[in-house]
Image (cartoon, rainbow, N blue to C red; front, side, top):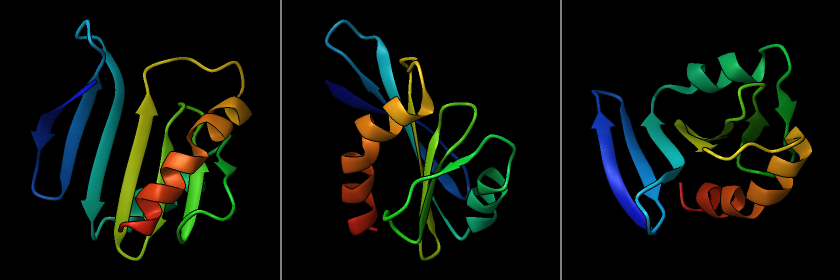
Length: 103
């Protein structure tokens, strides 16, 4: 797997992770001072809270896990579909906890 910076704007950095064949399998975003982004997704219809991760974590109806700790927000978007949001939570909770511990 390789990491490739995608785009960076004034507040957010993006990175795509690619498999050996070059297929993007995971997209990650990181921002500071943009906690309103997390708050907006956390309060959106269909959002599922994920307890015990950072200051808050949620899986959106679009299949993105957002993690908030302090003024930092990380988005994890697998480019693989899960049958249920709970499958995504199970698959990415350990990664989300590791990310939150390093923010």
